[in-house]
Length: 142
Image (cartoon, rainbow, N blue to C red):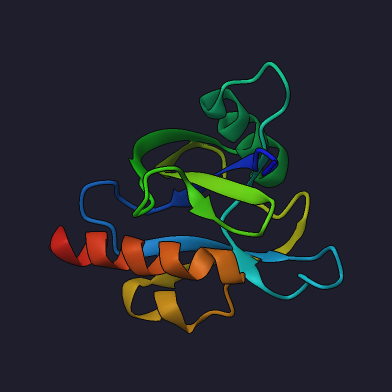
């Protein structure tokens, strides 16, 4: 029997939902085997939470901001982005509507990336395909 994957939610924080040119990347500070690599802010959905509730909670906890969600960036198979053997990720675009992002939990640095630099970071393996899809969508919006 194949175990049900753990659902993780995250946001790709952009400067603009319609014509994005900048993307916020968060550098992991822990655990040790992920430290120094870049990811999208987010985390696991707690029991009794909807994915939307979880993503808003995670962004408040990790970055200290409120966001407005855009569209979900769907995986090619539509069941979420496989990020590990046990975890699947659902990700939404978002813009900050309150506060200034700060690395409060799990991260030691945040960096706004201009569109040409989106691929130049050491992204977590599971996030690489998502960066490619975000770049494709951003280029199509131009």
